Amino acid sequence: MTGPIAVDQLTLTSTERAVVRALLYFDIFRHPLREDELRRFLSTECPDEHCVEVAINTLAEEGLLHRVGEHFMLNGSSASVTERLEAEERARRRMAKARSMSQLMSHFPFVRGILLSGSMSKGVLAEDGDIDYFVITEPGRLWVARTLLIAFKKVFLFNSRRDFCVNYFVDTEHLVIEDKNLFTATEVMTLVPMAGRTVCGAFFAANTWAGAHLPNAEAPCLEQVPVPKRRMQRLFERLLGGGMGDELDEWCMLRTKERWRRKFPEFEGTRFELALRSRRYVSKHHPRNFQERVLTAFAQGLRAFEQRTGHAVS
Image (tube, rainbow, N blue to C red):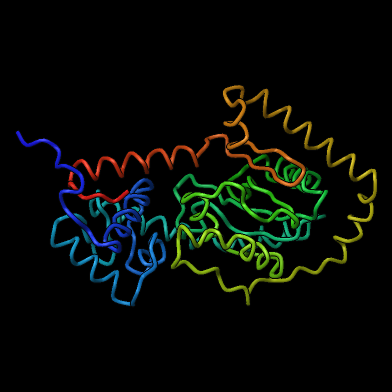
């Protein structure tokens, strides 16, 4: 019986390795990629407009990737493509709701920018999927803004996250994402600005580090992003200003953090920081710790591919 091929026995070009890495990453989500998406998610610069096409053809000739229509994958079948197309249709149907909710949130006190995140930002949505939002707030009032949004969800949406999942907040003075890796770079570069044109632009300008992981990805166009009118917003913000507002914001943070520690006792130390980061300028509520799980699965996928094929792609 033939064992695993020795890694480095066979050689791929840098673009071919990058194509394999991109497909391995999105295989974790059963998300086949089109050629334009492959270019966008390459981990190396694409020297010319034909580089991805040439790499795809070579890898296909060697039996290392599969094509179904205009989609490519390393593992899976036509069922993966069917699932993606169905998920795209669900996302299209829910986009109007995402826009209306984004506009509503943009008028809440101290909210300065709204961006779509999660699967909707990749243009897909599972049957039971939520619409996720990345929220940018005024400094010193992040936890007040978050508490008001959560209260709205609980009272008026009966605590349903289906159209209103606000799980990541930063303020305008702390726009740089602290965790810098392939997962966060992909999430940053796929965020979809929905409200707050200037603030969204500042966010992408502050996170150019993502280009080190995805050098061919470009920040989205901001021309069509609405600029909310802030007349009523300013009125409520004056009521929550000054020292009283400072104390309220800190109280909201401490109460939330205390509740999360009770609810998620399995997260301690660095794991709590990664999944449930809670500081005056950032709130991250990812109790499934998706970042850690995805990066672990990606590393395992790289090793498995190398052992199976003999091609070094790490």
